[in-house]
Image (cartoon, rainbow, N blue to C red; front, side, top):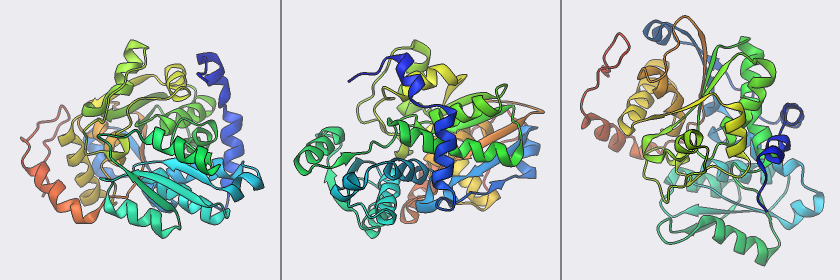
Length: 345
């Protein structure tokens, strides 16, 4: 059943985010906030990085997965749950299922990063692989859910998941105070929607900008056209942003709460990821570097303001890091509008 924009907006409120925070207390990590004098100098801003790469399972996804699973009845948990995911929601739901004693089945693409496949299995989930090019993950998951009597918990377009993700911004604002700008990566829009809801409630003057890859720009085009856009099998190094479109909940929520959407190139994503590795000494995955790329590349500039940046996850396959670095080295040097040039020492 398709949700009307009004009902979708009312489906998730700040009260839901607050309730999610209570469920997650003592279960999810309260992740650290990092600062960098180098980044502050280069951007002429005061920048706060919310490090969800230090969250359980290595990404923000644990918040929404646990919040959703915790609200199911005991009977539903005993029957089991199913999800489709490229990796981070897979690991998150698998761990949540382990903690709440719910059997978990995850539908994952056969080209998902090996580290994410193995981590999902290590939490006790059954992994069912599918081919992105020929199969629909939603169709595969729905068929299994029907056949086995499982509860489907989508990775982003599900109110309890959105509310759980909103606790990221809630914690950031509690720790650093009000912000002038918040930059959030966007795939299916669950993190962006949840963070926007929490931010509007507690820092209403803060500008909220979503960031996605240029090669997977469905959300940006949807935002500007105000019509849902779809990309089949988008090709981007940011595997967490390979969603085909926003959802029936996240699309109206983003239109209602978010101020702007921008995109970043594949080269910018990799430059920013390796910058974070080298300068901040934190391992983030390509998707986790999207928001940083918008800031460091000068796509979004906010001099003399307080800027929050969500580092959404750190589940990079280190075996692939050399290939990613080589890929970045082959791209032309880019001079940023900021007063510096990208160079890795």
